[in-house]
Length: 280
Length: 336
Image (cartoon, rainbow over all chains, first blue to last red; front, side, top):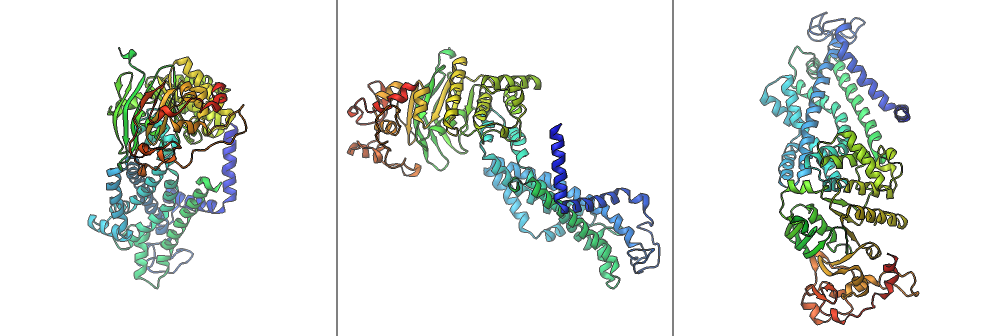
């Protein structure tokens, strides 16, 4: 009981001492709530033409209307669904694939390590946006393919991270002690090594949500991600770019990307401080 | 038939690392049930690597040759599956530093219960937990019911080493290998841990292999002693013979590094120099550059282990060493 209370107090302390964490949680929480409930309280339909085209922001249309006369505010709010879901899928898949590869490479060493890590090196040698573009283009435009493209670019980072961590943990005495107790390789990896290797991956993954939002939007911006008329942020900014003097078309989704990215980074920063034992 | 075979027997054991360095060079020994075999040597003498080879835990890429037999069963080149079944059940191992050799994120009870269940797959979690409590009690950890639920960081150094012993003996192993079990502990705790080890060893008539660089511990606990240097056995024999009638200048050098309790206020005599690098072993006897008795033959010809009086020794001039050279350690040996 006292442990539970202690843990709660600990978290409360973390919250009050870390305004950035609170801000991050509020921002990300806001967007999650929007994504889940927007259907219920939206004023306009994001796909319907609701007014004259290219209207500047007004009380009826807080962020104006786009080149077809759709409400930018509504489309921006709907856009978060694409960004959140693609970043979630990409980060989870990349973490799973990358951690698996990195853990196997670090644990077994030798040839396994060489082959897997050279693969990682090759992937990381490409500029990420360029590689994602190439993959997305070869798969054909579409949100799903964009997600696959970003995963292809993203997993090697986690593979490196996890390999380094596993190499660190595996050299500790208690791993040899577990081996001396008769534990199998699988058991060593799952029970003794991975539970001590997760922290950097969790931190990095949280920070990466924002990056992935950005990269996915970039693909949509150049026409390789979500296709019109989907209200995806990158695609909307692309629209805005061709109507440069109607600045509000790009302003809404641009600010949204900024907010979401900032929110994830705040959380990631705070998590690093909390989880890093050297900080205490 | 199998019962008559010696408990643990190594014959001409050699370990060669991936880079071609031979770090254990033909080691032969026998550990018997109910007895304590002390393996003494400075850092880098190959004593730990020898015992890692017995456990099948040699560094990756190392080549093992020779023979290791556990109750007649050959362990060198035994399949990994078989070794895994033996580790922790027939052979237990205790490590030097209890601060780092216990998993920090699992409670001590779970660690011990896991050690039990690994070799008793059918056992229920609650039975294993009960067994963990018994084991902690066995190694004299006070309040074992409370201690099982604690993490390693809540244990003191001595208590951690007890927990590690509990893990190692969880499945009543026949051989217990203790690699410098007291080195990381302070002196008063050292004695307690040795007591625990001795009493467990008596009770279950295990063969205990005690790796250490502390001759005082060997004097107090061991029945037989092996002195290793540069990957070879320099001398072996019963603890009395080694301490009182050593026939090797290296052993004598080690003994004169020990302070005496009753003795006169003489200066301790360190052995000059340091052990040779693995990559730059001298020709001839590996000890000759540091040996006060070294002669020409020592520089060219490597001595083989041979019986002289009551011990086996690897020295060309063993006969020239007289008794009494180790007389100054009488008090140490008698403390046992």
